[in-house]
Amino acid sequence: MRNLVDGKATVVTGGAQGIGEATALRFAEEGADVVVADVDEEGGHGTVDAIEDAGGSAVFVETDVSEAAEVQTMITRCVEEFGGIDVLFNNAGIDGPLENIVEYDEDGFDRVIDVNLKGVWLGLKYGIEAMLADGGGSIISTSSIGGQVAVPEYSGYGASKAGVSLITKSAALEFATEGIRANAIAPGLVETPMVNDIMEENPEMEEQFRNMEPMGGLAQPKEIANSVLFLGSDLASRVTGHTLAVEGGYLSQ
Ligand code: NAI
Image (cartoon, rainbow, N blue to C red; front, side, top):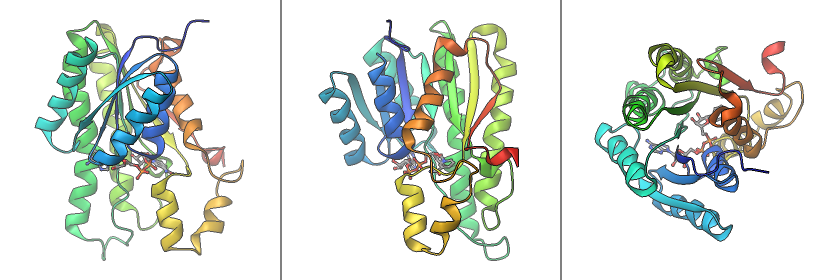
């Protein structure tokens, strides 16, 4: 059987660990050529090595997604290395401060918006520009269930993730006739370094986290990666503007 994303030039931001790492590996397994982009050089090279060890093709491009020039370079490197760009996974993100709005630090708010929202906007801006010159493509951005329901002390994060779903719709409408699809995923709780760090710092939250989703427990990064793979592949050829929740039933309550 043909692989799902054979030969598709794919950029994954936040590819050094967690959901991004799992998605980069999964796309490579299904035949994609992958640009792993991240601020974490060591982790990024680790993902590239794992892809190459499994017989796949990948390069690392050090990128801070909140910097326009670095996002442009990331996209250009993909076109140079792999002859175009077919899929972009705008996934890099940070959780930011964990405080109520009164206590929330203003610089922390700016940073979470810069990385999670502006970073996605920059990816759409330069990714779509390159895709238009290359016959179209599919962009998937990482939102969160925290962008659909308010989580106390996560105002900056929640606003950034709600924004991701909205600009995803903007991009979908603006380029619907030009071969560009734009979708988002909204994970619930995924067992990644981001969530493990929160549980380590606040041990009392672990039990609450593990009981949060109706299906129980935490999702594994690969379960998110498989949903991204669907949206990035031609199986989702008529799906655009959508935010796909991958949250074990949480939003059905
Ligand atoms: P993680 O913290 O394990 O990995 C995030 C990666 O993004 C890291 O490799 C980090 O170096 C990179 N990164 C951070 N800032 C960056 C920047 N400015 N430019 C480039 N790379 C940068 O996080 P995880 O859990 O894998 O999260 C990935 C995405 O999924 C994030 O957008 C997060 O908000 C979102 N998400 C995660 C959930 C979870 O339960 N883990 C739930 C819902 C959404």
